[in-house]
Length: 440
Image 1 (cartoon, rainbow, N blue to C red):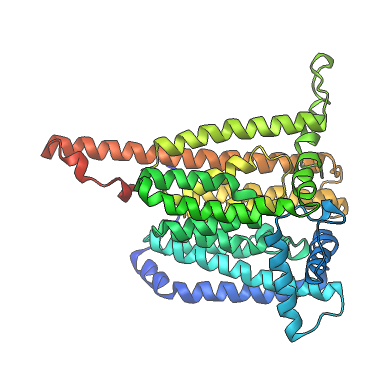
Image 2 (cartoon, rainbow, N blue to C red):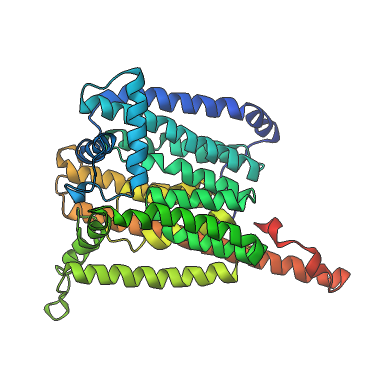
C-alpha cells in the first residue's frame, strides 16, 4: 500500500487532472513567488539566530580579510572550508550592490540568498517528480511542502544555517544521477559532502550502485572525480592550523543541546532501576554513535549491493543520508533536511507526509523547548522537550528507512510476479526481456 505514490482518498477526475497538468507550472511559480515575498517580509523581524550572527558571519568575514577562520574559537566553525567560502562569496557579492554597515545587514543578505537557494531546491523537486509521475498533484504537493511547511520555510529565516546553500547541490546531483549522468552527478554529490559532511556515507553507496548497474569501467571516472573532490575539500584542509580540532573535535566532544545521545542516555537513567544505571560519558556516547553508524551502514551497504537493480539513485542517496543521520550524536532540523530532500523527490505522498509530520512535530517541540512561554504545554522545558524532539528526529529517520526498504521489497515482488507470468507464456527468454529498470 505504501508503494503507491498517491493518497488514495483523493481521486481527481480526468478533466481536473488535465487542467491541473496544464496550469501546473503556473501554480508552482505562484507558490515560489509567495514563498519569496513572504520570506522577504519575515527576514527583517529577526537577526537570523546566534549560529549565523556569532559563527558563520564572523568566520566568513575573517576569510574575506585573509585570516584563518579556524585559528580562534574552533567550536564556532566546525565546517569544511567550502561552506565558509560560499558565505564569503555571497557577502562579497551583496556588498557590490549595497556595502553592509552591520552584521544584521549581512545576515539579511545571506537569508535573502537563502530564499533563492530554497526556491532552486523546490524547482528541482518539482521538475524531477513531474517527470516521474503522471499524476499532476504529486509534484505540486512535493515541492509545495518544501516551500510552505514551517519547519522548512519559516524556521530557517529566524534560525538560519548555511546548510541552505548546500541543499541545491544535493538536489541537482540527484536529478543528474537519475538522468544517468553519473560522472557529473557523483561529482556534485561529492561537492555536497565537502560543503557539509552529512552526505559522506551516501557517496560510497552511490558508487557501489553505479558499479552494480554499469560495471567497473563506467564507474572508474566517477570514483576518480569524487575521490579528488573529497580529498581536496576534506583531507587537504587538515594542513590548516585548527581545522582538525574544529571539525573533528566538535563532532567528537560536543554534547550540544538536549537533542544529543548524551541527553537521551541521561534521561534513561531516570527510569532505569539502580542496577541498570548507565555511567554516561562523552566517550560512551561516541562509542555508541560510531558502533551504531557502522552497524546500520553495513546493513544498508549490503542492501544496496544486493538490490542495486531495484533501487533508484534517489533511494540509494537517501539510505546513505539515513545511515549517517539516524545514529548521529546530535540532531537538528537543518541536519535532517538533507534527508528530507530525497524523501520529497521520491514522490510517494503516502510515505512523504508521515515523515514531514514527524519533522514538523520535532521542530515545533524544539521551538517550544527553547521558548516555553510560546508553548501551549506549560510543563515543557529545555531538557525533556529537546530530548523528545531529538527522539522524534531519530524516529523520523527510522520511518523513512522502513519506507525505502519496503518499497524495494515491493519492487522485487512485482518483478518476480511479472517474470513468472512471462515465463509461463513465452518461455525462459522472457526473464531476459523484461528490463528491471522500468520498475525503478
